[in-house]
Amino acid sequence: MVFVPAAGWAVVLSVLLPASDAVPVSCVTRDQPNAIAELYPGSATGILNATIAVLPIALELARQVVPAQYNILEHAYRDLLPSFPQGMYPLVVQGAHDHDIQLKAYNLTIPDFSRVGFEFPFLDLLGDGYTSFSWHPAQLISAQNAGAIQGSEAYGTLVTPATFEPSCDAYTPGGTSTVFRAVGTASASNSSSACQKHYFADLDFAVATWPAYPLDFFKNVTNQPSFANGTQCDQQIRLFGTDLAKAPYEPRFVEGRVVASMLPFGERREWAVGVYGLQIATPFVENNYLVCQSLQGYAGVDIPGI
Ligand SMILES: *[C@@H]1O[C@H](CO)[C@@H](O)[C@H](O)[C@H]1NC(C)=O
Ligand SMILES: *[C@@H]1O[C@H](CO)[C@@H](O)[C@H](O)[C@H]1NC(C)=O
Ligand SMILES: *[C@@H]1O[C@H](CO)[C@@H](O)[C@H](O)[C@H]1NC(C)=O
Ligand SMILES: *[C@@H]1O[C@H](CO)[C@@H](O)[C@H](O)[C@H]1NC(C)=O
Ligand SMILES: *[C@@H]1O[C@H](CO)[C@@H](O)[C@H](O)[C@H]1NC(C)=O
Image (tube, rainbow, N blue to C red; front, side):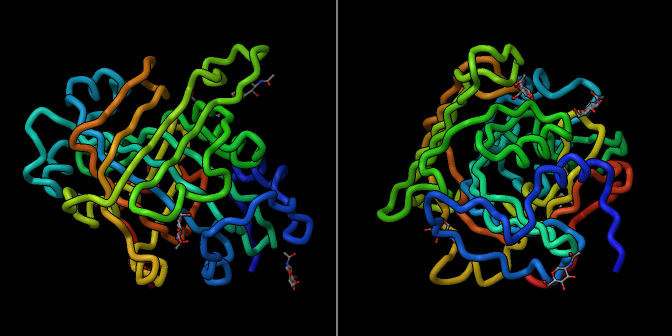
């Protein structure tokens, strides 16, 4: 099979490594291996082990930070969450460890990395009134992973290089509570607006007393095609129905606290009450740098493990 990557891959491929030359990892992750690379050789595949939480914010605030040309599809999130408070919007924060990423057709791998950012789902990128896209304007990404940073910047994402705790896992394991922290590492000499070390995120969660949002809500928001500056779109298919979501790795509904200073909000913000989320590891199949218009009407795909 001849596989021609989309233009943006040129950026990423230039920093990807042949599998055999992969940089040795300095700590050993608890994440399970990518078992689907061979099934989808022409796509990037990997494991995303994540904390995904809903941060209810005033719809008016969402309206202020989301670029004015994108309508918010309120009916789409009310379809999924009929009792979500009136006048509110479900901002999402996701802190994740990306593991065992491969582009099999090229025998390529990319070293593991961590990342965190705010995600704005249910946006009408195409102006069609019904296709939901998720806006991912900014991310903190593991500073040593130039490939991941450039791959994200190719979308127009404002990327802050960062260090993470824990450094090679999705969150601290064991016990009932978990910690995930990211701190920007930008050098003082770089005056880029994204590259500032005052950016950080702390996600502290514990097992929830009840599942405030259904699993399908998290599946829906993480499967919406994403964009940053709107030039190109990312179709990341997250598989919620594989062995990685079964015992002993079953997803956990969590509740907790998020404190962060990340774009597109200028200032430090804290959410400490009514913050519910999910911790789940999903294999993913990712098609990068797509023409956004090609995803009109996208409602997910039907592949094994979805
Ligand atoms: C996800 O990460 C947590 C924390 O490191 C770990 O305990 C869990 O086993 C991981 N799950 C999978 C399926 O890799
Ligand atoms: C990938 O590796 C396999 C096994 O070593 C080899 O048969 C194949 O030709 C390689 N493909 C590419 C595109 O390098
Ligand atoms: C979006 O970002 C990409 C990558 O930095 C850049 O090439 C493109 O010109 C940007 N587009 C807009 C509309 O800002
Ligand atoms: C400054 O930081 C930005 C964002 O992290 C990065 O894209 C850019 O390459 C950096 N510039 C230099 C000169 O290091
Ligand atoms: C998410 O839910 C909305 C509202 O029901 C639906 O229109 C959309 O197709 C779903 N998207 C995905 C990727 O599942």
